[in-house]
Length: 270
Image (cartoon, rainbow, N blue to C red; front, top):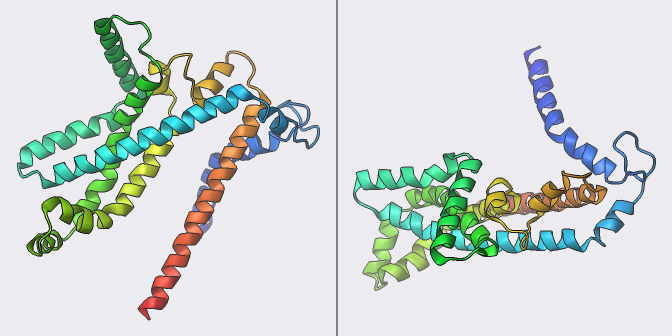
């Protein structure tokens, strides 16, 4: 009875999580463009989507912003985690760690308003009214991505064997060369995790972007939000379904690749 109730509970959770996505995908093929009834299967909204230049422009902006911000945040976060890991003063290290975690614990609206006020002050200092745009979005996204990269990389540094770097330096490597040749390969999984998390957070962000964006540079979440003042086009359901499909394919590829690597390692171990 206990196992039955546990399975029912898990099933209910998965149902609540995934039924909205299933409904969205189904109605993206609805010919009538109505949420009240499903009148027939059609690719009409997918055809409309591929003719919507504004939507593709917003998607392109989101991808460009996510790629650049995640790459910069990954580089800065990795070297920030390195500096924090090598810091000797325990109290200063703890204080910096606490300050670094603040952007993750802050509500997005607080971070967004704070960044907006900062950029307004900078604009007043520079005596310009055209400061908001891609640059402010990029700075904001890098700012809230860095703590997540550091959170992903720091455990990898803690797992490193210090003797490996010391041995490399004894054999003639400089500290920087020892880092790139010995330590960096060991922390690559943490760096990749931080990069993927940064990319996902940047691509998905709406609240912070809403406060630091401009009409000249609109991301996909902002584009969809602006439609809520009217009726959301059914082509957006088609776009959302395509994004879900792409993510599903990527996850399947990663899982199958990981399973294949595990099987290969097990065979090698034998």
